[in-house]
Amino acid sequence: MDKDSQKLQGEYFRYRGIPFPVGMYSPESLSLAENTNNVRDEDIFIVTYPKSGTNWMIEILCLILKDGDPSWIRSEPIWQRAPWCETIISAFSLPDRPSPRLMSSHLPIQLFTKAAFSSKAKVIYLGRNPRDVLVSLYYYSKIAGQLKDPGTPDQFLQDFLKGEVQFGSWFDHIKGWIRMQSQENFLFITYEELQQVRLDLRGSVQRLCEFLGRPLGEEALSSVVAHSAFGAMKANTMSNYTLLPASLLDHRQGAFLRKGISGDWKNHFTVAQSEAFDRVYREQMRGQPSFPWDMSPEDTSPDGEPDPEPSPSPGPKPGSSNDPNPASSQ
Image (cartoon, rainbow, N blue to C red; front, side, top):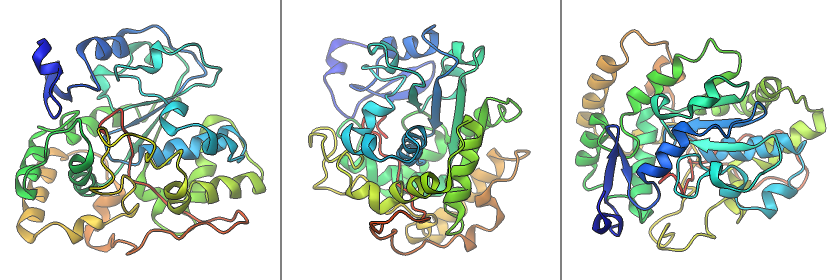
């Protein structure tokens, strides 16, 4: 990559065939993420394709690690609590942090940190309906300074289906990671499972606690659920990305945490776009396990409005966030 290209926002370079935005990533930062030996058995990796709920999962895990106490999520920016593995300012290049370290990544499995696979580090992969991912990524691309302008919805749909977007093909990404399901230190969970029913966030938090070996009492569990609700995250300046300069995220053009619902794609796809997407999806995902969004896409109707602000007393109230990720062009 030449020096001139490094100065341009909205430009991509390829690393082993995968497109990455210039400015947030470099061949050197990606190589460090892939080849570092700086991995501990106590590490916890959150892996997602962009706009799949990364920051919602970060918020949940931060609260679990603090037994439901919200003081950490209210005092430190979210990108510092779970820094990115592959960015130029990498989690692996930061001064020593106490264990367990939370780290985030959008890397496809073939580029992910090799040392993690021979360690006891835990990996949580959060998947999401790719139709909602596409819509969220389209709007995110309009406010993120490091990303290309998404163009028309039809153009962006074609780019997404061909994998000509940041981090490449959604299909390849999830198919690569789903192969890890048999590993005891790997957990696959979906955005839709967290949101399916009003009580599902609580059940999913319990599942995460069990996976991490950190059981919580009822009061702590209720606090995690309440403080990780979409409304709570949207109101928290340490989690809503409003602290970032407009050159990185221009909130005048739209909110980073947009709706936090499932099924919003139906408000955006035309019939022709939906049919085009379904054709590629069926071809690409043939032989793969069934996902929540496969059951009946027509029934995953959006909630209409995000969850309201949480009540002062913690209670079981689910919510979700679109995956905010300044560093990941997420």
